[in-house]
Length: 298
Image (cartoon, rainbow, N blue to C red; front, top):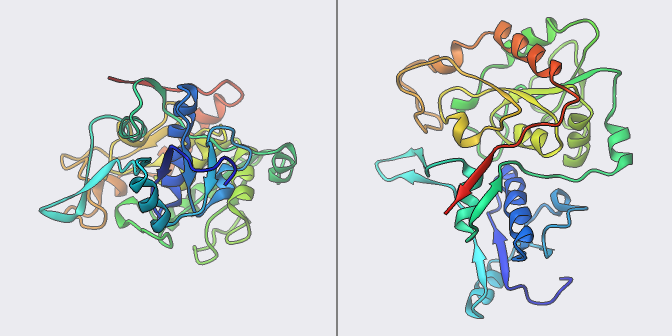
C-alpha cells in the first residue's frame, strides 16, 4: 500500500473484469469530490497510470473485513441483483449502471457516464497494426460469466469481416478458443488487456457484443458498434458515442442471461448489413470528441 490504511475502498469481485473497469468511473467522480477510494482488485493493469484511485491493493476478504471492523468504508457497487423468482434474470436499478455504481458509493451530483483506461504513447504506437483498422470480438462464450443472450453469432461477424471496405483491415481480439474469422489479423489469445486496449484505441471503431470489450473501447475513446440484443437496454449499459443494434421484440428488455422462449429474436433479427451500415456512420464521426452523457444523482 502507498498511503497506509485507506478510509474508503472500492471492491467489486473476482469474476468480471468489465466490472473492475467500470469502477474507474466511480474512482474519477470520487476524486473530483475529494473523496478518493482505494481500489481492491486482482487486475492492477487496468489502473496503471490512473491518478484517480488513492491506492491499488490486491483482493483480500480478510483485509476487507478488518477495514470494516475499523469503521472504514468498503463499497461493493453491485448495480444488479438476481430476480428471487428466477436466478437467470438480472434486475437492474433505475438508470445507467455507472450512475447506480456512483450512487452506491455515496456520490451525488453530476457524473460522467464513461470508464477510463490510461495508455502510454508507446502502447498507442504498438496498437497500430494497419493504416486503417477495425477491431472486433465475435464472441464472449469463453468469458468467466458467459451469457448466451449476448451472443450474435460468429458466422455473422465473419460476414461483416468479408464485406468490410477494402481500405479497412479487421483485427480479431478475444480468447484463443474463440472461432477464427478468415480475413482478419488474428490476435486471439495473443494480447494482454492493455495491448488489446491499445489496438482498440488505434482503431477506427470497435465492433462486438455487449460486455467488457465494449466498455474497454469507451475507456480508450474508440467509438463502437455493438449488437446488444434484448437482455438489457442501451439506457442501462450504453454510451452516447456508440451505435447499438437490436431487433424490436415485445419481450425486451428481459434481463435474462441464458434462458429464452423466443428464439433470441432480438439478436436473430440484426443483420450483418445493419452492422456494416452502423459502422459506416460511426467511422464518419471518428476524429471528433466523443460525446459523454451526464447523469444527476440526488
